[in-house]
Length: 164
Image (tube, rainbow, N blue to C red; front, top):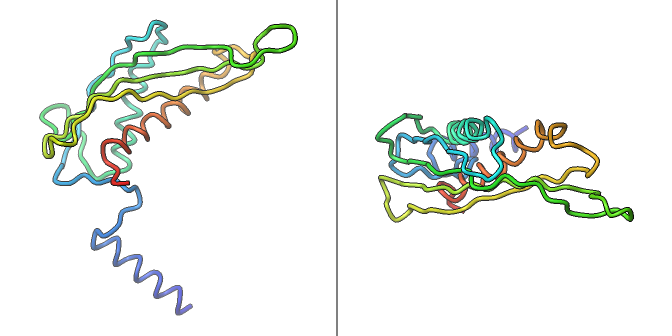
C-alpha cells in the first residue's frame, strides 16, 4: 500500500507540474488550432470523405491537447487535400483473381505554426487497409476508412506536435 501511495504522489506531481503529458504533444505557446476543410482531389471521389477526414483530425487534436478549436486566426493551422483514394489487388489466387485488395488513402497536409514558424511543413501522409478479394469495398469501408483515418491523423499529430 505504501508503494502505491508513493507512486500515486509521484504521478500526480509529474502531471500537475507539466513535466510529462501522456499524449507526448507539445503545443508550446499555442492556445488555438484550426483545421481547414480538406478538399477531396483524389481521382476516385468517395462522397463525404473530405468532411469525415476534417472532423477526424479536429477530434484527434481536440482530444489529445488542451488547445481550443477556432475557425480563423489560430496559432496552429492544418490545411490540405485528399490526393489519393485507390484500390489495388495485393495477392492473387491460383485462378488469377484477387485474394486480397488494398485500399489506400493519401493526404497532403500543410501545417502552419504561427507561434514557432520553424515548425511549419508540407508533407504527404498515407495509410492502407487490406481486405479479402471476395469482399466489396462497400462491405468493408465502415471499418477501413476510420482505421486509415486514425493512423493518418495520428501521424499528422506526431509530425506537428509530438516531441518524440
